Length: 311
Length: 320
Image (tube, each protein chain N blue to C red):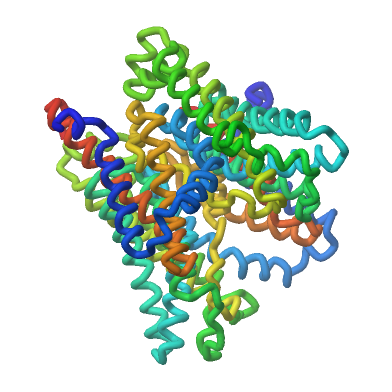
């Protein structure tokens, strides 16, 4: 690898390697799967990547700050089901959406309170939340899906504006917004700082607790948003939604060059990682590869992505 | 009395007794001899897996892949059996599959130095996919009657799986207490840099621990397959890693590493088993079981952190 890198006429930066990988995947599937290279399919991919993408935003920030959130899939399902139940209870659909978002925020707040305030291990707390919320989702709903939402609500997940899905536009705006926050505001600098050296940040008079807490709140909020978009796209709130989504999210983030030990990474990288994952999944789907084999491939990709990182 | 309360596992034991008494009041059938036997019998697989998880957590690590290793091993045992192998040989090969999975995890974690959470998250999906792949997505059933001995047979009046679990528990308690390997695990978990300076091969110990863990899951998988009589690769042991982790943490294992015993873990496994069994006897919706597991994990880490803070305060060493 290193000898190859020296022979190249340009300096191979990480972004370029990722874009090349993305291009290779697109080329490969264009030749293998006949329906892959078409405008409809690409728009379809964009439409489907929103949930993973929305969660990948706060996940990138959390991993940059040196922690990890495994509970995102369960928070997604929890807020989706809360929204569904609120709607069934006779609430206006937009009020139900707010209920769902508040449920996600509450989960994020619990995570944040335990992890930031009491300095508990993020991995264990979020695994606990993962199991507990998934159980609660089944308890709340007895495993039965909620559907029958009004047409106006499906706008979020199914409407196309000038041929581009609305939710993909929303995702792009979110990415730009958070990239701005991470690059140009103090908060972004604090996140990188905590990932690099928490104690220095603490002794600089910056509240590590508050920054961490906000990060987990954001994670809860974005997971809930992803839940709302998922319900809008699939037209039903199910207890199983969002299972195993953390594999996609974490793989996208880590392929995107965010360092597993924190301190390094970028949202633009995550976006490219996200595209790699969704095009890979879409291509494999078109080739008829089972979802479980896709998980094997993603798992191997995850190992490779992290294996290349050196502390 | 004071010495009794100073035992690290004292809160867990008290809590277990308390839960037992509560359930006994709710439903009189709970403390019946049959039910106690049932609880012991139902939790042998969890207990065997938990031994390996205790060692992993003692090192300050975590293993999310045990459920998938169980599925992979159980399906391959099913395949070996259906190809006409003798039950003993098939079981031995099954354990070997578990060891191979452990070697896979150990190689990436110890040799390549990738964080264990990432490796086991990835291998969780990889092993699960392999299990479904080799099984062809169908149920593994029709095990020969001799094979049922491993999960349902009796030896000297005790059920065979329980006997295996007891032997393994005693063996690993001794291993952790009295061998160099066991003391090294505690040393690495307690203070990694000190252990390295003392000349302990950290990579080697880590690798060995993951291999042992894989072997134990392999043994548990054989018992599981034989007891249940049918294995579905996509769901077998799907929540096992979380349950086992909860058991270890509740049993007094510290997520920071270096603290915890197998005896405590066994109590933790019993507590989890009692809660599951009690909820079902009390006719609570089975969906609550998962919620309870998650809640127990969070409770355990809360207790864990409180203990950690208290110990550090006693030392007075922490700056922040």
